[in-house]
Image (cartoon, rainbow, N blue to C red; front, top):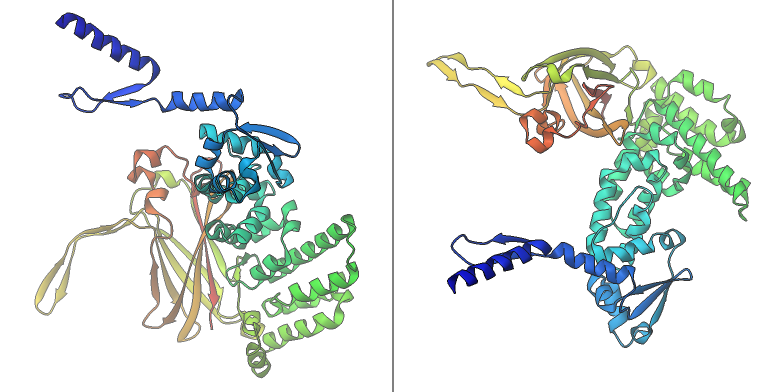
Length: 497
């Protein structure tokens, strides 16, 4: 009898293993944990694929999808209200017609299948319509998945002309995290974005927001002006192609004056301002631009009374504030090659100079800088200090940080305030771009010539050998070049009032 019972137990365990996974909860207990979730999902998918026992049909763009009220209500808050509340006309109908955007119609079958399988292949082309459906029908888990995908693939979206569609949708729906990530990517890689076909899709409000930003990264203000001219040309082409009913000439005149009001002409050199007089756009709107350009010439000539008066106007001070310009006037590339082979606590030293002022009349005021870059941590060796009481031992200390130490070696003035910005380059989605910007404002004096900026990037992400195994097997996003073995930063030092 005992033998038969044992055989029966063995048979039961064999049967369980054939259809699901089992795991003993306790060696001394007869309990087991059954995981038959994969099989259950297969059953649900079969119900969906073969339209078995459907009690409701969803009609989208003339196509009907068989479904089950229980699954719909359990997956979506909106379907739960729609199909269970008597005050809604759909609750007793066998066929419910849904009005969806054209791009959502094409992925609705994937959206519905997700309810039954929990699986969905997301790409840069379908994530937006899927997110729109998830938001509309309040499928919170799917919304989170789509938003996380978008946060991780903004460079990819830019290279595939989806970036401004993502940004505009995120702004309209209050998805603040992805809104900020998209805005930062555009600000820090403006010239890269401006050379994509997607640049024409940026709306005037977003462009104005960007033009007001001090942390917009461009080579110089002239380059930004040329990008805005290109955007204006693209807007005119769109209006013509769309056969817009608006008066194109009047609308374009309006756009020119609105967006060009935020170009910082004083940040252009006198030579660049002179060259602008030959620009076709300047000739067409001469009266408007002459006043803007005269402000620039007043700035370079040191007419402080006029500059101070304009600074008191709304957004007037912005005109005299440098952006993050990557030209040699303010910046220098800090590049470490063969990064993977350099030892820990290695120091790379760079020397460069920058102008103290953007004004032409102060062009002779130049500062010299020494940069010590510690990309693999800082090691303070044990040492001894001689003090009046005797000798003081200072123990060894290791700081796991990516540090930049900046020293003003030659100061053109006894006291100077500068904005120090560090642009972190990297690769994501096969695109080299600026991944992050770190900025700080510091007042340099004869007694305070040095600042240390720590945690420029994550120490563990830059140095994965010091991190976990999962980090080591991933491609390092902060290394560029053909062999992904170059660590590249760019330092910008601009005057700060």
